[in-house]
Image (tube, rainbow, N blue to C red):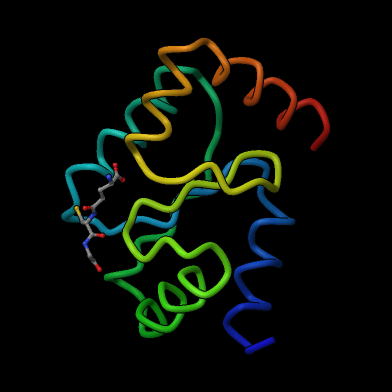
Length: 105
Ligand SMILES: N[C@@H](CCC(=O)N[C@@H](CS)C(=O)NCC(=O)O)C(=O)O
């Protein structure tokens, strides 16, 4: 496993809700706004503002097969991007997942 894959795994383990994001990305913005509206704290990493952002994005791609941002992990699980987050919100699973993620933290 590469150094960057290990770093991603550590970040996911340490943060109940983490969004790998880019500061200019509208899907990322919507995902973060959606999580804000649920009143949960989330760690956001703006990959475009980090020297190692490209390497981290590549490592996420290797671990999850998703190469776009946002890449969202809740409770240690990869849930996908913004469209996946919005689908979880629509079907009511998001609130349950967030509650579980925060209460086991
Ligand atoms: N369906 C995806 C679309 C995500 C997407 O297209 N993200 C763009 C940025 S807004 C992206 O990752 N582009 C490639 C890149 O920045 O490396 C979602 O809902 O998250």
